[in-house]
Amino acid sequence: MIEVKNLKKCFGDLVVLKDITTTIKKGEKVVIIGPSGSGKSTFLRCLNLLEEPTDGTILFESSDITDKKADIDKYRQKMGMVFQHFNLFPHLTVMQNITLAPVTLKLATKEQAEATAMKLLERIGLPEKANVYPSTLSGGQKQRIAIVRALAMNPDVMLFDEPTSALDPEMVGEVLNVMKDLANEGMTMICVTHEMGFAREVADRVLFMYDGIILEEGTPGKIFENPENERTKQFLQSVL
Amino acid sequence: MFLDDIWNLARFFLCSTSVSAAKNYKTMFQSIYDTMIAGGRWHLIFQGLGITVLIAVCALLIGTSLGCIFALMKISTKKILRGIAEIYTTVIRGIPLATQLMIFYFVVFAPLGMDRLAVAILAYGINSGAYCTEILRAGIQGIDIGQMEAGRSLGLSRWQTLRKIILPQAIKAVLPTYASEFIVLIKETSVASFIAVTDLTKAGDMIRNATYNAWIPLLTCAIIYLVLTVGLTKLFGAIEKRMAKSDRS
Image (cartoon, rainbow over all chains, first blue to last red; front, side, top):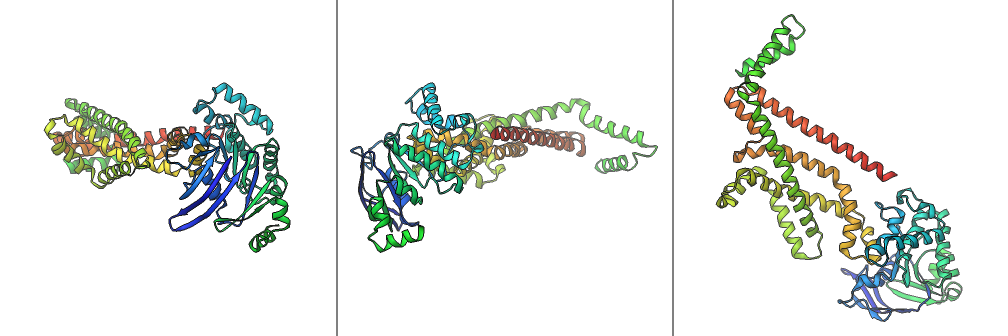
C-alpha cells in the first residue's frame, strides 16, 4: 500500500531522515518507536507530505505522491491523520468538525455526512457530544473525536502521531481502545507511540528508529524480547 | 477674548455655589449661544461630523478590503506576492499620514482633478489598508499551525483550509484590534484639514476663526470625538463579550 524508497529529509543543514526504505502492506499495523529526535514523527509526516521529502519517493497505492504534479489533496483524503495535540477546530461543533471535510470536498451531502458522523460517534460512545464545542471536552474525548474526524473520510490508512502523549494518564486507555478496535477491523495503521504495551499487543511490525534511519525492525516479539542492536536494547531498557 | 473666557470659566467653577452663580451660568450660556448657535454656526459642526464619519467609515471599508487582499498576499507561498505586500505595508506605515495625504492630493491625484473629499477617503483607505493587512496577517499567523495541518491532512486544499478553518478563527481573534483601528481612524481624520477638507476639526477651527473664540468650538469638537470614541469602545466591548459567550456554550 505504501512504498517508501530512499526517503531523505533535511531541515536546512540538519539531516533528520537519512535513508529510509520500507513497505507497508494493506491491513498491516506498524508501530514506530525510538528516542526523541530520531525522526519518527518526521517520517510519519512525510508519508502524507505534511513535510516535503528532500529526496526519495513515496508510492501510495502505486502512485508516486512525491511527484511535483501529483494532486496531494486527493491522496490525503485517503490517509487519515491523528495528531498529538488533537487539532480539533475550536470554532466548530463536534459534528461540524467531523462533517466539514466530506461536505466541503463534496464527497457526501450534509445529511449523509451527519448520518455517518453519528454512527461513528455512537461507536466511540460519544453521540451526546455531537453539538458541543471541543473546548468542553476532556483530552481523551477530544482525541477520540479527532480519530472519528479522520475516519469520516473513509481512509485507506490511518497515521497516528503520538496520539496519547498529550493525555492525562487515566485517559490514555480510552483512546488506545478505540485504536485497538480500529486495528481489529483491519485498518492499515502506522503509529508513532511511546505506549509499548499497545505496540506489543497490536503491532504486526515494530520499527525502531534511531538517528534518521530504521535501525531495527521486526515483530513485537523479536524487537521486545530479542533485540539485536545495542542501541535498541538500551532504549527498551529505559522505557520498559 | 481668550482671557475673558478663562476668567468666565474659572468663575463659573469656583463661584457656582455663591449668589452670583445664576449670573455666571447666564454668561456661560450667552457665550455658547454667541459662538455656536448665532448665525447657524452649529450647522458647520454637524456637517464636519458628517464628513468625519463618512471618511472614517468609507476608509475602513476600503482598508478592510485592501487588508484582506494584502494579508493573503503576505502569507502566500509566492515570493513575488509577498514582496508586493511587504512594500505596500512598509511604505504606507513608514510615512506620516499628513505627508501621505498631501502627496495623494497634490501629486498622485492632482492631474485627475479629483474632489478633495474623494482623495481624502482614498488616502485614508489606502493608509488604513496597510494597518488592516498587518492586523489580519498577525491574526492568521497567530492561529496554531496544527489547524492548517489538520485541515490539509483531511484532504482540504490550502485555500479551503484558510477559508473554512483559519480565517474564521483569525477574524474573531483580531476583532478587538480591528475595532481600535477604526477608533484611531476616526481621530486621524482630523488631519484631513491639511488638504482643506471640512471635517469636524476644520469646522471647529473655522468657527474659532469667525468668532475669535477658541474655547467653545474646539472643546465642542473634543467632546464630540470623545463621545464617539468612548461610545464605540463600549459598543465593541459589548460585541466582544457576546462573542466570547457563544464560545463557551
